[in-house]
Amino acid sequence: MRFLIFVLTSLMTGMLVGHFFAPDFGNLYEIMLYTLILIIGIDLGMNFRIKEIKKLGRTVMVLPLGTILGSLLGALAASSILGIGVKWGLAIGAGCGWYSLTGPLIGQYSTVYGTLGFLANLTREIFTVLGYPIVSKRISAELAVSMGGATTMDTTLPIITKFGGSDVALVAFVHGFILTALVPFIVPFILQF
Amino acid sequence: MNIFIPLIFGLLIGYLLRTREKTPNLELPMSTALLLLIFSMGVEAGKVRISASWLLLSSILFALLTIAGSLVFAVILGGRK
Image (cartoon, rainbow over all chains, first blue to last red; front, side):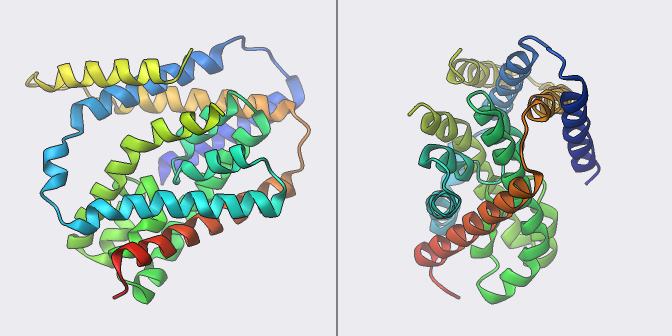
């Protein structure tokens, strides 16, 4: 929660500085983006183990697929309603809640859609925290994990554990883990078109 | 630069580091890079004239529909309780 406040403060400060002073930081943005991607890669390389995921049941393997497909379809609908290009809409949706990666990746091509990608995925995380306790009672707690997308291995894991139980926590972690491994490849792939 | 280059390079470094007994803690460098990146993204966004209400409503719409889509597919693929 504290880091989320840092993130929002950082974004708001940046927006105010940009609005009133319009400074030119050169290629700081690209340097930071590639540094972050490199660190994400190192983190994935140190922790990703396919064998351990295979040991778990079918749902754990299928759920991330459903999450991605559903996110893309939802994003397609949103982009149609808002009159946004399909490419931007799909890229925003493919972020699966990972706002800190999706926003900057899209921001390389369009500042407006990068900001939208950031806020839309941040909103998804916030809605998951608020909505999981309710949705997990309507459908199974295991399937409701999909609403959190890639965030279910870290930021939304505590709320899922609290309302879904420790069994669901493992599903949520692996679900988020698989999506965290896929999103850095899917978003740039969509943006190439 | 293609985004896949640092990603794959990082994956290789991470894979090599895995064999070491003590792996580095990436929490601080990741948080620092992230906050600087978000700040610079905010700076770029601040330079652009954009309607805040449009941005807010669009974000909410995207969030709601991507969540709804994920839940529908989860129920289809996973089966209802």
